[in-house]
Image 1 (tube, rainbow, N blue to C red):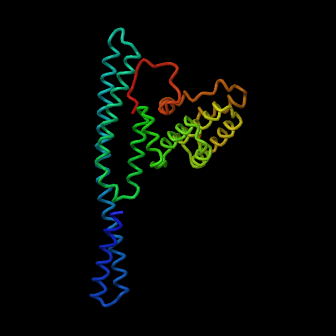
Image 2: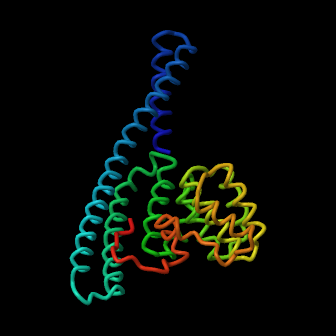
Image 3: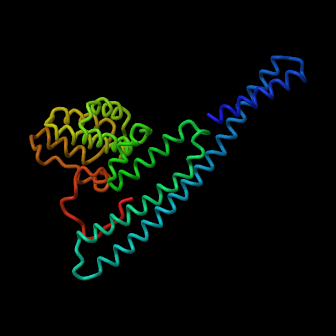
Length: 265
């Protein structure tokens, strides 16, 4: 909003001045439009640099936190008799603390919200994904309506929450996003929606989704699940082989905990 206002003021002033100097209203209008465009571009570049600086700070902080937590995991795992449950609880506590520190850094961007129309939604999306990582689903649900869902991970998180809340709009949202899903991250959406349909006893619907995935994703997990369903082995349906990409949605817990843990960032 502020960017548009500043551009309009600069454009009108420039147009008026140019019209006076040249005596031509046409040149005045052209000058005003050009100045408006330049002002918007310059302000956009400045805001982008400010945002990127904060984003870099967040990424560096998260990377340092990840390394610190991993060192702590390695030390704790070397202790005899260490309880896996205690270790997991400690790691999750440290991860939550790191995420909350990152969330505090996003507050530095609030001052730019009125200068960039989509910035608020972009930051809301980042915050929503942070809260999702540490299972703060009440905060996730609060932010959902103000997010942008352009990438497969945020789309999958929304689909997972819609499933948990029995949202009747889930099918429409999933169908729309699957039309453009592709590649390895896109495979997550096909895996998720087919899993949801299986949970809802719609095996035929899940098969249709997995058939559609063949055209957009060459993924072994999806192909294996398609074979299981068409052969009537519904109980063997599993997305476990997708590893952390699947378990980050917190819909299932790994059946077998690995001895070596890693921070889930």
